[in-house]
Length: 473
Image 1 (cartoon, rainbow, N blue to C red):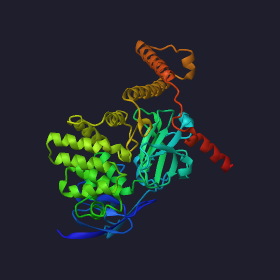
Image 2: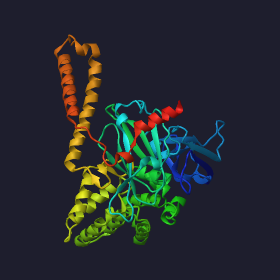
Image 3: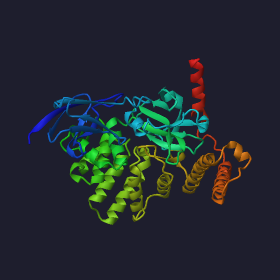
């Protein structure tokens, strides 16, 4: 069967990065069977080769949020197309420049207005950075680093300037415990929006964008366990693989994301030690590279005593260069810490405790590495993180109990209990009422948390929104 050529054009609205963005495509038949795979890129048409089978055939583009876009390969009059085009980003109008992060949150969901959420009036943001001449993190004024703060009913967008130093965001939403979120060094976009959980509770959430579209696409596919789309993007002969694995200087963060994928596949041929050495030594501000290099060396095969020693060497100065960029680092950190405990000369107590506490209080923000804590070097203690999770669960129980009460009766019948027809209904009502009472007790018992760090350098969301409204009037 002869090969046919197809020109595919891809447009991603609000795209960022120095070179094109890539996404996986498949040619499929009417039953969804995949006939051919590949990847397409923005900024220039991609030539795709496939074999024509029994019509109809379709070309399907897979997006990082798990959805797909499909185009038929035949016109209505059954003529074969020589060119198709995909345009991505039109449905993510809340955030044009955060194409992957915004779509990852599914902006089509039915959620409440973010700004009317009760907890958002106490929301605040802090920016922390670590300079080479200082062993400790320091808080810097947040408002001075912002280039823009657009907002809508569904989302608030913070655009943060680039910096050569490791940075992290400390954010508190919904009167919750402060959360530390890793930031890339490039110009960064922080999206604050609401997320509806499976139980129906709507809660604010923060997601970081600005890693570059290719890095975010690769890491999002990995997070969802979708390895085949990444394999299509990073096929050994693809342009993206060449740019990331050969010309990594153009986008080292995306190269790091590709290395995470190759580490999962144990593809040692495309993850040679020298390449990892260069990624680690050239870009000290990407701590993930150190974890990937050490893990790959150990998994290639190494005696236990040498593996434990390498784990200690990797982690001993690890925190000097910030915190990992991607949440994928959690499992690598955990494995190396376990090995370090078996070393003849173990990791120093302070570093080991800090790393263990980070993992115990882990709270990723989308793809980003994150944990509960007051500052990047002050993660929440393990027992406090456990207690806080119980408090959050109590809040969810309260919302669920209130929903059940609304089904059983209305507000008037709460003040004057109804006459229920049968014992089963009375038991259901008593259970909902008791759950509501216990949940309220848990929430009322939670202590009020003051702003950590410097209040003068903190961005209080309500103040900013009030100023914006005054200017608009």
